[in-house]
Length: 486
Image 1 (cartoon, rainbow, N blue to C red):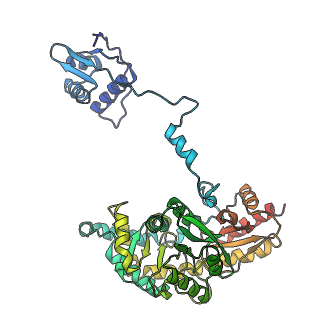
Image 2 (cartoon, rainbow, N blue to C red):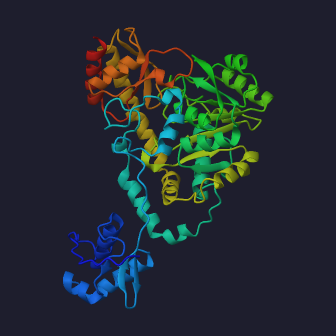
Image 3 (cartoon, helix red, strand yellow):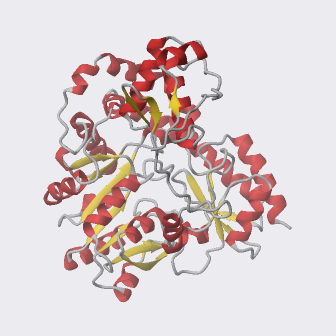
């Protein structure tokens, strides 16, 4: 290496207040070497001279030189001083006009998202009629905080809990009891597996149950999150039409009688809102039993039924272990909770846990303990009763306001359940055009055709009402009438 003498006229940047002298000097010299301002072979002054030149202690300079040497940036030899090594630089392939690496461009070129997902906009600020959140302001946050603090004080005992892949056992016991009383689900705590939400449950189930090319029945229109999960597994989506009773079993049999399974929202069909009646449920269960098919029952918001008796889960009728029941507390309580669950047939549990172990090792969290106490102490039941009354009033305000302000433009469904409602355009406007018009007046709706696979545009919108009081609902309906009436 040629000997290059450096006078070390090197400008060092100002040191941030929070950064130590050692860390600051190391970063300044390292960057100077990497960027080439200190050329290969340049000789640095002796540590004593360097310290005097920059007003530093000799110990600080020596420590930095030793670190740079250990990482290969400089070489220190007796009699030769400290010299900058030749560093092989990474060749810049991208040009200023093409800042995206080639592997990203290839991935983007090959990626084809499922149709219902195409065009969905990134989440913006919460505005009527956003469907993403419940009435978060009404959640008993202080109570939750007290429970969390109590658990934090006993954190040592929490750390000693065995992780068996299912989640916190006391929480699974509380979930099993809750589902038995509220949804008629028949299960033991050992059949309950805690996950981060419905989407994780669908992803794991799709990878375990489906091979590339396997046909699976999907409600059409239906939930795009399930479409994404099954498409990622390479499954063949079988679009089964939805009528006034939910997924049409007879149509599914006519299209693909030997499908590997079916995904349904029997309690409150997403997105249209109807409940699957008993006769249709029995037909679906019989088809699954005769063909050895699975049924994934997504019970995403059946707790919120505002009139009539609660409808038991499809799983409660299953006698052949064909139904896998999934649900979540994320919208029931608050979205950032990230706790959902599966209820698996007993023979399927170990296989599912083995698959899960390939994706994550740690399945316990402190939030699981807090939620367990929230349920066991009766707070969940009280919260749900209070929210049913609140949401029922907000849904009534939406239905009544639609009749007043949107008559002849938009007809709102009379289904009194859930946290959103489907509304159908009466002015001939396509769903996507109506969505765009609503956005122009700062109203958030979702076009129903975003959820279709093969069926024609239902010409409707989804309106979430849970997060908005009656005044906000009325004001948004007036805005919507002004753009839909053009």
